[in-house]
Length: 310
Image (tube, rainbow, N blue to C red; front, top):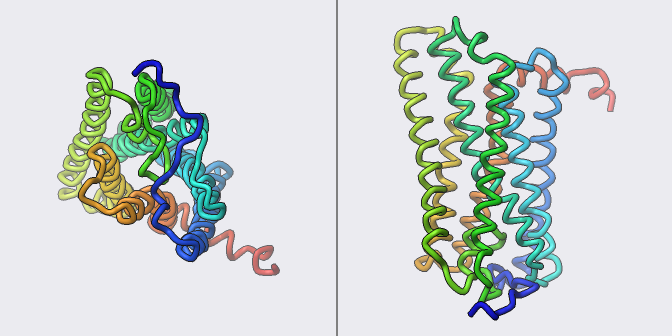
């Protein structure tokens, strides 16, 4: 088994049942969605970066969430668009590894980012008088570092362990690469890989419980104060929507883990694509609508004379 050489190219089987017409229809939706995602997230990042009034912890963490969404978009769309146009459903092993690293960084980064945002909202609502002393510049830098270091570590470990054993297959049932897809192609799996995958799910469960506890305490605090309720509706509702969408994304990784035997290839592909592409569009929209300072800045930009004279 160990003499088997790894394939240089992997075949993406997810589009095998798609005819040329279906590919063109999907491409006509995918390309505008890709461009829209880039524009929305880049616009939100620039608004936060150039508006000094938004250089607050909550908006800094939101900016990191948008960067993470761009990471997700860049990791998925370009290669998927190539598949749709060329009908060559092949990807080199090296490209697959890079895509896998990006996808895992995004998936874990979504949890770390939303957990840090929950900390910020908990302190802002439950301990408002201590907010600026607790969320000092050093604390904010430390939390931002955690947002990215932990996903990077998990990504490198996940993909490295998935490639620990030679690959005996070269056909993937997913439209994109990630560590579980590579793991399913391996000649064998060992207990260490299983233990690490268990750690991945446990860490996400810990983040999930942490956010639930934070919001349970926030809701209790909001019952006693009208001001807190206003803060909750304006700043916490977008975060909760993003969090629920992220939790729905767990079903996609679970489908991969158990090989989605109960779903057809088309249904499994459609579900995974929706879970991967919808949040990067929804997040900047809901934050742009619900957060007053960002909404005001967007309206100011569109009402400026330069825009009106175009």
